[in-house]
Image 1 (cartoon, one colour):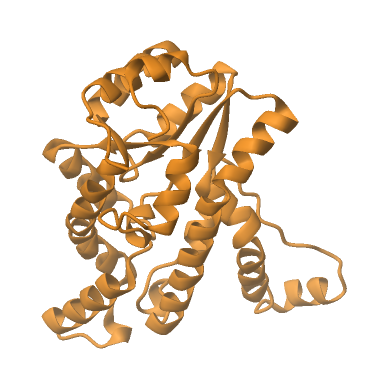
Image 2: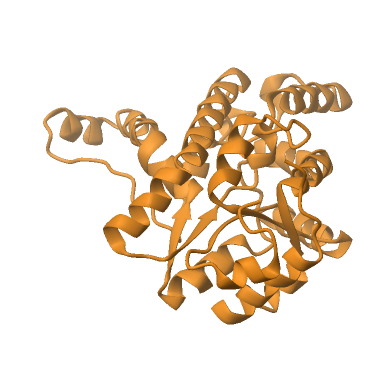
Length: 290
């Protein structure tokens, strides 16, 4: 770890952290709070994915839908209008809309084969965005003069890394530059995440082996063929299973950094209390062997 003790962290002129954990446990809350404090550069992995690595795919998908409407097709073909993605830190919906959900197209779903293609596009994009972290640390300091840095990751980071592999290329690269901080929820948090997801199911990215197994089980359990699947019902059915699948993968990543709880994160009100939270987490975490 780049900070070996609480004192090391407190005395560091440049504080660099990477937050990971399930969406909804406080990563963006902390990132926004620190960014608003003025001395922290906020690097959002999902924003980087949606602008640098999947921006063209997102816009082309919107154009493809517009081309089905004769009125819009004529305007696009004569360059009378243009279509762009208005993605922001606070509105990342263009990424999730493109990712989509598998199932009946009449209910807004994607054919499973197309869904798998988009999942793979997202996987490659997320890994590339994660590997850009060192570049953005240097850029934030050299170009903008920010002394401190936050990398705000998506919930699917654990799908592409192996925390038990001491040579994992993504974790090795990230830990060279940042203190990896897991935000961990308890059973009550997980139940609340499930309830929240049930009210508003959103697209997710899954490890391919997990997705394929879940899809086949869902079809078999319900005696469905692909066109029978309600996309929202499938992702609802999958969500709790995805949480259970991800938990040991997050746990394996803990040895690469420190862990804080969602309740501790919720209690952070400013950069000072955040500094103390990380110092406390370092004090209670034995340094990982090199």
